[in-house]
Structure formats: C-alpha cells, structure tokens
Length: 582
Image (cartoon, rainbow, N blue to C red; front, side, top):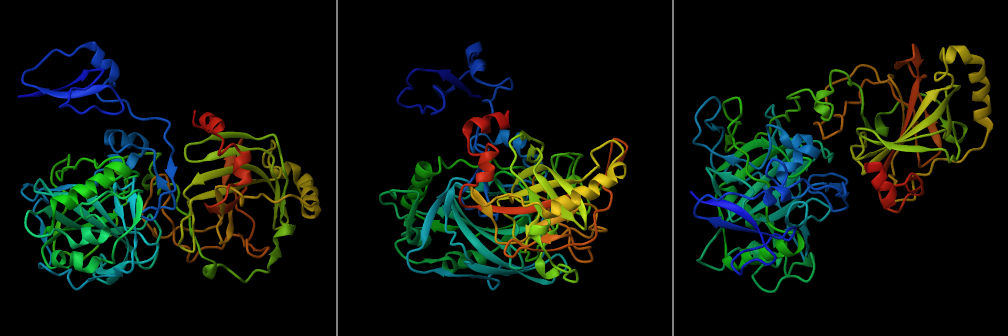
C-alpha cells in the first residue's frame, strides 16, 4: 500500500500543492520510507499538527443556530482539536454522520415510521423576492440566505405526537455533502435550519432539513444555484452579493420532499457541537451542473477559507449497537440532555446540585403584588480604581468595592462583577450576547462571625446607603449595550423547588428552569427606575463557619457600541486580553 509522507521543501514541485501554513509538500510514495526527525519537529507528539492558539473566541457573524454571538475559537482544518476547547464535540451524538443502513446489531435497523413523501405537504417555504442578499458564512462554510425573519415553516409532531410548527430561519448551501448515506456523499447540500415557532432560544432543539445535490451532465443544472448567482460565471467581488433574481426555496426542495427521508438526532456540525439538532435527510438528489458546483466551490474557497468540513462520524456506537435512524418520520423526539460522564465543563452534569437557576425572566409572569420602589433608593454604586480582573472557569471576574445595594432594609455590598459571554438567563425567551452579574454580600457576612456580629454596623450602613448619591454601573457604552429588557436581581435560594427543564443544555450554560410556581426575584426595570422585590435572601453558602447571604444583579448585554465599563475592565485592549487569557 502507498504511504502519505510530508516532505520539507523551499518550493513545491509543479504537481504538488503546498499548505499555506507551512512549507510542506504532501506526496504519495509507492513504498514505505524512513521518516527523518525533522518531520516530527513540525508536528505534535501524536504526529498531528499542534492545535491553534490565540484565536478570538467569538465573531459577530450572524449564527444560523440562534447564538447571539458565533463561536470562533477553532479551525475547520483541525477538527481533532475541537473537543479540547468545546467538550461537547467529543460526545456520542455528534454530526455529521454517515447513515450506514447496512450495519447489524441492536438498534441498527432503521425504524420505518411513515411513507415516502410524508413531508411534501408539511413544508412551506417562501419565495425570497426581489434580489435577496447572499452571504458567505465562514462559520458554516456555505452560502447563507438568512434574512433576519422567517423564510418558511415545517409542521411536524413532538415526542407525544402533538402538532408542532418550526420556522425556517436560514438556508445554507455547502459545497460537498455534509452527510453520507451508506458511505455516499452528495456533491452539494442545502441545509434549511428551523427553530421552534414558540421560542428562539439557541439551546432549544432545532430541526435541519437536508437537500442533496448531484452533479449532472444533462440539462442546465440547478435553478436554485442560478437564482443565487452561482451560475458558473465570474465570482462575486465580495463575500456578500445580491442574487440576480428571486430565490424560490419551495421549488428547489419540492421534488426531494416527495421522496424518501431519514431522520436522526445529532449536533451542530461545528463548535460548540451542542447535541440538540434533529436532522431530516432527504435522499432524492437534485441536479446541479459542473459549472455551478465550480462557482460555489470558488466562492467558498475565496471568502470562507475553503470547503473542508468536519469528517463523518460513524453510526456505530463504541459500546455496541447503533444510533437510531427513523425512515420517513415527521416526529421530533425530546432532546437528550443526559450526562454521559461526570464533568465540570458540561452543564448537563450539574442537575443534581444546581436545580433552580437560571430562569427565563418574563415580566408577564412576575409577581406584581409588591409595591414598586424607586431604583435610585436601592442602588448605591460608586467608581473604584482598586479592581483585580481574573478569569474563572466560565466567566471573567472583577473583584473590588463597587458600592452597595439596599434590599428590604438590608445593605448588600457589591464585591464582584462577572461577565459571561452568551447570557445564562433568557429575557422574554431571548438569549443575549453576554450577561453582566453584580454579586452582593450582606454587610457583615464577610467578617468573622458573620452579619450577626456586626448587626448594628449593618443597620447604620443601610441607612447611609439609602441616602448617599452614587454613580450607577454603566454597561451601556461598549461593544455590548444593555438589551431593552429588565435587569434581574436574583435573590439566592429564593426561587423555590426546581421544575422540569425548559430547554436543552448548552456548552458551559445551565439549562433554563421553568419560572412558574417560583417566588419572584427582585426585578429592576431599565426602562423605568422602579423595582419590585420579594423577601430577603435565604442563607445560601457557608463560609468560614457562618452563613453568607448573596444578591445577584443580572444585566443582559447585546452587541452594539463600545462599553466604557468593559473597556475599564481591560476588554478591547489586546495587551489586557493576552494577560486575561494567560
């Protein structure tokens, strides 16, 4: 058998292709050779290139799967490195998958649920009229048709057989098939991404409809490719262009919808690889011309960095058996958020100890029986220069004396700011780009003996805090700005018993707990300076032999102007960013 060897060279021979990130040329030799030590000096100890470092963790590219920011700390060319940064990429329900239907063993035979064409009347996609924008996605390595609004719908059934409707939010055309059926991939694949119509949270299960394309030497090729401006002519001058005509998604998918389909539960096909996607793979391949394929490949090579995708994962399970595949199914099973093995990095493993937060904070469900109180009478923050910033496992933390918060006549000292990329709470069902949490400790709890030992001092401090003017923490002038929703004051341990999970687990994020039948936490409305609040926090943490009471003020942040607060913490400064990362 032949052996692939990478040889050092100053200039590649005319028939070889050099990798841009090194001076290596790959050639195929007819017989084994002895490799010199110089080769292994370029590679890692395992014989593979070292994983990339220093990448920006997020990009502002719109995300097909609903993330408010798009994960970017990975390279498409090195999928073997993904799990080191994104733990879920090493899970057992990953995508894309080779749907090998010939495997034998427990659960390997496809479950025939319906008949061919059952999806034909359930999908209804819009015509993107005029000259819609086509945008190359570096994240998806495809051409996206995202408009910011619904582009159609898909009516399916939930795990109990009840009707459920999904809205199509994006359609992404990729060069080369993402999936395979019995080892055979398509020449191109259209992925139509749907979210539940009831909510747009990124961690709720989504449905992806896959339409395959096959190169054909007969006919003019694909009408969809032509509508998108991928007809084989000159490449667009930028990564975003206007389509030459309206794009008809329904016509592009109808023939495939009338045929056979296979469905399985998998993951996002790129980091963070969250396992909350239901894939429906149509098997009737649509024709596309060689010139159209060449145009798509050229656009992605020029503006997305290439066409390479994550390698296919096997359908066979390591412990025996196979991942479930349903034939002609219109049912979407519940997302499996079980914890495969103990881990601090995956929130699916925290249910036993973290059962009551975070929540979806919906003003319509808040307790309005309490009298409103002016926020100016509660908040007593002040500028400070003695601040230490350091990263923890899941957030960037700043420790200092930031002032105080008065809740129910008790003074809570603001001792820490925590910034988490991608908000943990949702606000009216929306997850934001980041979340700022101000942590407060009851005055006296940090002293030996706790608050009881300094109850008199705490009472005097509360009276002082209510009358002293103070500067308000300003999270509204940076790359993130306050979202037009409530900031929530979370009184620790006052939520009550937990209920069933509302959404699926996300990487480094707790699942949301349902808010019904829960004691309302104090809520600060940013639109109007009023606050409604519940009773004081119950004891939550024991520290140095006594009880510590905490109040968390949560503020959602969205992409926008540069924030003076975050700039003062060192964000946006490359030198500080390096120090924080180290």
